[in-house]
Amino acid sequence: MDEAGGEELPEFASFDGVRLHYELEGSGPPVVLLHSFPFDSRVWVDTGVAAGLVEGGRQAVLLDRRGQGRSEKPHDPAAYADNACARDVFALLDHLGLDWSDLLAYSLGAQIGLRVLQVERRIRRAVLGGIGEAVLGWNEGAAIAVAEVLERDEAELDEGDRALRARVDRLGGDRFALGAMGRGRYVNYDRDFSMVGAAVLIINGERDLDFGDPARLAALIPRATATFIDADHASTMDNLQFLRLAPSFLAVGVGGAD
Image (cartoon, rainbow, N blue to C red; front, side):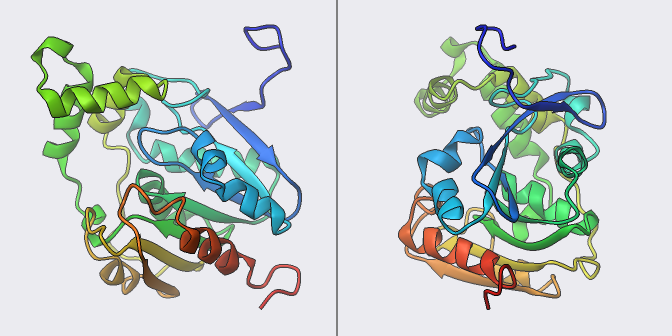
């Protein structure tokens, strides 16, 4: 039972014992969804992405990243190091007994998803949104700066930093867990992507180059393409083009779709 005395929440112990919450929406071939910062997995429901997948006959596997949502929230940076968030995805596939899955991820979730693709052979097709080649170089200064904004006393923050803090608080985030995630270098890549076997589509907004050029990233991955839609970083996930392109790409080869 959960703390409120309701039904037991679906969760599992990841590779290091951290408890992670997930939900399953719909039935059919699975799609694991990895959410962005500072949201949790409910963002996929709020934007209509999960509903679009379910309507297309897929099962949406909604994972709350460690440190966010209803998953456990370690405050130790070491809990996020060594690609722990990507390893959580491997553990989720094991827990669900999946021989294969597709993957849909956005922004920070897509950074983690990119590492998943380098290691996990059970991913058949993947859509990554809101990233480019700049994610391959870890910006430690920027990560520490965000962590400090989340951890400092509010009186020490300027107006812009207070807006970020207010957003995290409004979404129910644990700012010390989110700060620890940045300090722990939550993702690290091999420079060689030739081992990636999944077909990959990278979708970015035309006004979104926050993480570099997606075409240059796609060029490093054997079966990857990149496309732009009429959006910026904040509006891509609930853009009608994204809601059409992502499920369509993932549908190829499933149930006779071509």
